[in-house]
Length: 384
Image 1 (cartoon, rainbow, N blue to C red):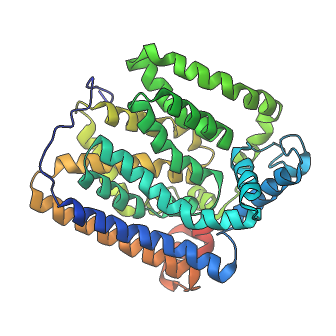
Image 2 (cartoon, rainbow, N blue to C red):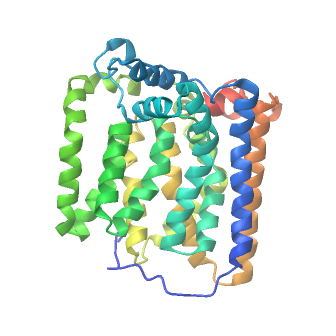
């Protein structure tokens, strides 16, 4: 009964739980706080977060120099070429703006994370209401796993930024925009974004088969990338068998680490939401959200931390939509939203202190040692 489905979204006009200006002010506060970390990082350290952007800077510089990283082994990752759209975009912007790739990546460091919040907010607002949109952002920001990967200047952040826009174009039947966004996503991150687009493909097969031609066109235009990368397919999965991050090591040593990484608040609301939806008829939007989540499941056995960092987005939206229905009284809705808002504020503030002030959170170290039997540096744990 999980995908019992209504033929259209029933989004009738209803009184707002909170005045729109209050909701937008709260959202603006979260956006400002989400921007500060990136600004501070660039001002004090001169480059993006973490180590992954160094590799992507190398590829962008290669394209800018006139190399062809898709065929040159010195640019390969795990014996496989990397999809090119992210790096070509940086190289093109470098040319157009007469700036270095590092400068472009520094700009991305400031802009990406707030833009991810904006695209998610916009999708949920257009398909539900402004209360649910803000609640979904609060759920997102309650998750360590969400901030871990998506605050970095990496192709995954582009996936998480653009896929809500792709869903919006798909649902609005804006075929040209959906096609362009989908093909760019596939050329941006290969198999990962293929899983995302697959959610809409499976939905279409079941509910709107007349639209299959849209996906045939996407497949045809993506075929050159698949063909070029096919000889390296097995090699690209070699990291799956390795312990290649502190997060994955913790997943392997203790499965309950997943609740910490997802966020205890979002873990609880997810359990309640799934129970709520078990026998409920779903709107088109809600059905798409579940397909979005379930097509990510193949990642879990190989990259459990990566799975969570992608899955947070649909889980947060599912929880927000569910709780906007579970809680009936406006007063209780407002109280619950403010609790979620405070949790989001705390999480952003704690993240800033951990990453930028070199705060030694001894108590977290002690908990990790006691329950996970591993000594962790909290900054390394969160940002690799």
